[in-house]
Image (tube, rainbow, N blue to C red; front, side, top):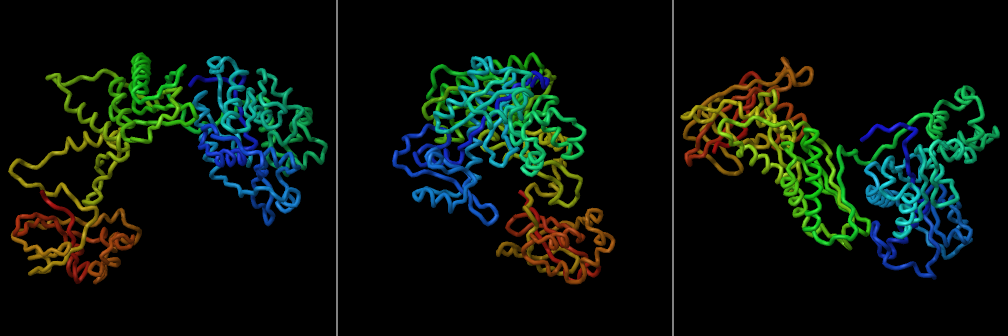
Length: 570
């Protein structure tokens, strides 16, 4: 995003004073999220108020227009409100539901700018910030942009006020304290516009505002006329920081809900489209335009997001990740198609789509690469494409590759990471460089390891030799051949203090032999990791091959070693 100074920044603040009651009215009329209410409230509908508990007293938090016309205001005790309006409809406040509704409104506001943040300075959490710097001309100017936001929200059943200024604090104050629905302040006039407003417009600290009021400082203009040093000593530097941020003496940017994209291309449609095919056609055209920009920058996409805005205000987002950077529009369209097919019936387009946006969330250098002498790199590309398609359909985090770790206990030698990530691609190259067994030599360790070692019951002729038979998952296996042992000592440097050279203190006689069947408790896993292991490759009479180990040295670490099965050979 371009670097914009505080003097040229333009912030649109949107305030929803009746959000708690508006969402209840919409829900009762059958409207969901931002879709238009299907029916207007009946005239005989009783007044509505939302209450919440304050200490041991129930007070009104919000009231609708009917309740306000009957003399009810926020802050009034519930008992007094019932006495004044016996038929009052009282509903307890649902802050989680209000947060979901506000998030849906913020998603809808993304059609104006990707930099949309929540106003969390005040407890009501009923405001939004839109950084519209440099984009107002796309909507007919700042006045028309602010008016469109208020009008559209009103059409969808929300009472809204909007103010556009050079700082977030000034825009918020004008939206909350202004007498008109839309205020557009020219650049540089923040101090003049804020002077007549009360201090509570920029400072949510009610105690500090009350202390200032007792000194006769009720408005922002009163503070601007006083020496700064004395105010800082008596009321703290935070007060001056709030004043300076409001009048534009320094820049305090908003915090967007979503990370700002690297590049954005979008298409606003004069007539809504009603089919997924049309959506994919628009996406392909956007991907082609994005590819040209990426080619000039010498970059490729690593993750991208497609977003579609329905006419009724609902927003759908589809995100993909790529294992190898790309600029190919056809490949992007194929991956987004996988996401659309994965959602199935959830891709309801309602009354149509009027905005489609494609965002590059992350990019990296994508210089031409040297292929092999045969000129055929299709095998690697096909595998990368397969990983991307599976990730687009099932989720990128569900397609994993093992990453080798510097551990020698078999269950700890690898960890799964997303296959499309840089770490996953590096892991694939690392495993490819690992030498495999000789052509006529069987593998030393099985490819399939159990999620955790499972205990087995064994019968052995010698205490330190391989078993003659064992029982695993209620099946008895007679051992025909055995090879080993391969001894792995405990990783004493990773054990807690006192469990290294003094391992015998932990593995006293009977410790390993009395391990419970459930290996989840931390102390049980610690005991197993602290034991010396002797691994054997065994073959049963039916031809099955297993990888088993004995935990604990006989006579030194335990008097009765336990046996576990950890893997199976193909």
